Length: 183
Image 1 (tube, rainbow, N blue to C red):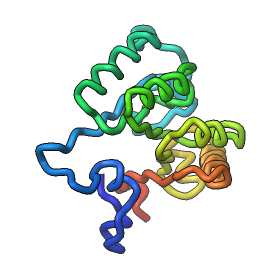
Image 2: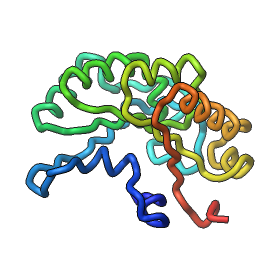
Image 3: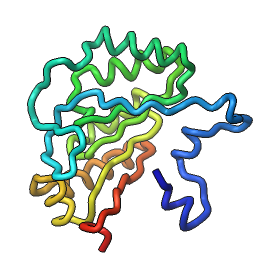
Image 4: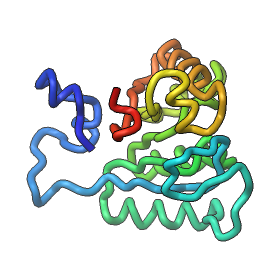
């Protein structure tokens, strides 16, 4: 992942703070774990790597199994757990798992399409202590909606971003540049 802020402005981004703390060396750094905690998703992205759809999937970790995995991550001293998907906000126990991770001294992040972030959801995300929310976009308006497979996805994601900002939550954009959206 390349930070455009770092690349163009030579300024640190919040992601740098998540990955690298003062005094860390190659011997003390630990990986950020990205967990696709569900395949269920409310969008139908043409570039989906997890082959997600808006349905439940068998074989996903139960709450207890997920907590055991988080304990294993804590034992390994993982500093950050990034909840991804599918759409992680569709996982019913997401906030419970976030609380459990915090009790293990693991910071948490969400990578989301942003379309489900109402004002209430944004306030809960902030209150429950997620460190950062990354909202994925694939271009402006129609281009994003074509990539995401749902009309109005761009406007809903933008509303989600605004709700997060209004709640005082750290939020950033995730943008994958391709030959289809670089203009």
